Length: 99
Image (cartoon, rainbow, N blue to C red; front, top):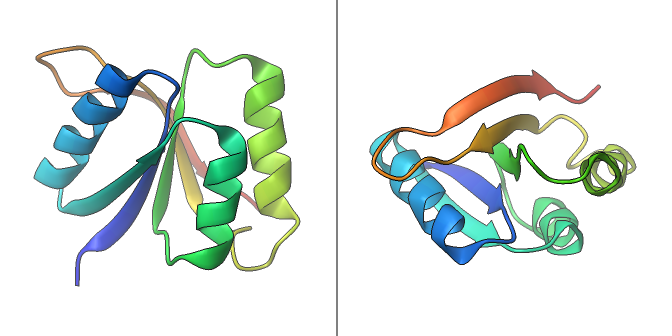
């Protein structure tokens, strides 16, 4: 079974680039454009990794992280912050597990 990844990025082109990269890394990606949608997916689907927009405003990332922490189903999903670059693998700024 493929690992499930969730891409959260407001830009459609960036989501497509990140999905392509995740598929090449062995993930089955889904994508959403807003943090609220990410929280919904993480609570209702099996997600193995969440990839957030590295350039998103800190308050937006905080809202997503806090929303994930409030539910035991999503509190331990690893989060990576990515900056997609066309033609290259995304730059992963950091990756950690929420505790």
